[in-house]
Image (cartoon, rainbow, N blue to C red):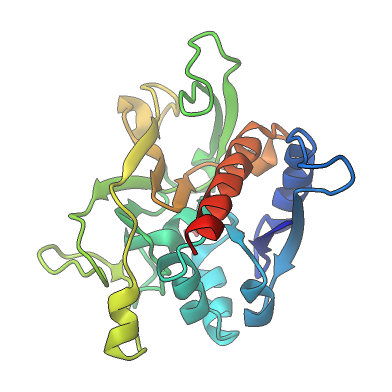
Length: 265
Ligand SMILES: NC(=O)CC[C@H](N)C(=O)O
C-alpha cells in the first residue's frame, strides 16, 4: 500500500485529502480487497518518514515555512524531495515552497524547500480581489482538444517566471537579484552533494490570454503547471473544485514512481 501524506501545517490540506480519496476510488486496486493508497495528514518528521509521496497544499507559504521551521520539518522536507526524491506535488503556496527561488517574498525573505529549478513570482495576479477562476485545457491531463476543460481557481497565485539553469547539488542564483533562494544546507557537505534535482523542467500548462481580466495575466503565456522528475507544481487549486482528474493523474504517476523505486532499490 502506498502512503500519501498531505502537509497539514496550514492551508487547504483537508480538501486535498478528500479529493485524493475520491481519486483513489477511480484507480483499480491490485486486488479487490486491498486498497492501493492510504492518505495521512503530516505534521511531524515521524509522520513524514512514513510517506511515499506528499502534497504541499495552498495557503500562505510564509506561514507554512515558519511552522515547518519551528517543527523541525524543513530539512526533512528538503531530504524527502531532493535526496529521497519521493513524488511531491505543490499547489499554489506549495509550488512557491518547492521552487528553488522566489520573488516578492516577505521582507527578510522566507525559507523554501526547493526541488524545482525555477523562480516563481508570488502574488503574480495581484491581491485577493484579483483572484479568479477559469476553464483551462490541460493537455497533460487529456491531449484531446475536445476534452472537458478543468475549472481552475487562482487565489493570490504565483506563476513560474523563470526556469533556472540546471546545476547539480544545491541551487544558488548569484547572477540576479532575487528575494529568496533555498538556504544552503546545514548538513555536512556529503549530504548536501546528494541533493540533486531530477532532470529537466517540463512546462505542462500555460495560461491563455484573457483568462484573468484586469490583471497582468491578460497577455497570456504565464506558466502555471510544471514538473521536474519527482516534483510537480500547479499555480492553481485543483482541490477546491471537486474535480478529481488531476489528483487521479498524479496518483497514477505516484504509483509508477514508487514501483520503479522498489524495483531499482
Ligand atoms: N492560495 C495560495 O496558496 C496563495 C499563496 C500565497 N500568495 C503565498 O504566497 O503563499
